Image (cartoon, rainbow, N blue to C red; front, side, top):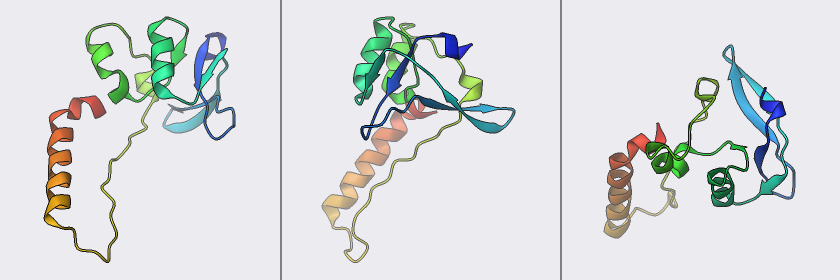
Amino acid sequence: QLRSHECLVYKFDHTANGIWPLYIDGTEQLLPVQGRFHSNHLNAIKQATLSDLGIAFLPQALVYEEMQQNMLTQILQRFTRKKMGMYAVYPKARQPDQKLKLLVAHLRESLHQKQAYYC
């Protein structure tokens, strides 16, 4: 049924990425989708979705507030499983100074307060 809908396609690296990873019966299926709107900017895809131009595959954190306000509806949630991690990366040879430790602690706490955005 998804193939018959207008999908909003995230395009990056000068390639058409009209493939959505969906889990069917516990197995990842790469489903090709089509649509007239392609963008390499997730916020543009979000705005196109809010303008009712089609269905989008977006990170929940990007659309969490709109879903809470019933501006967007999540579909196919039982077919998606993609989880993303967030990492603070710095050179191993260098011991993190106090500023970096405080920054990482602040980011950890801030993300923890908004953990519903990432579930």
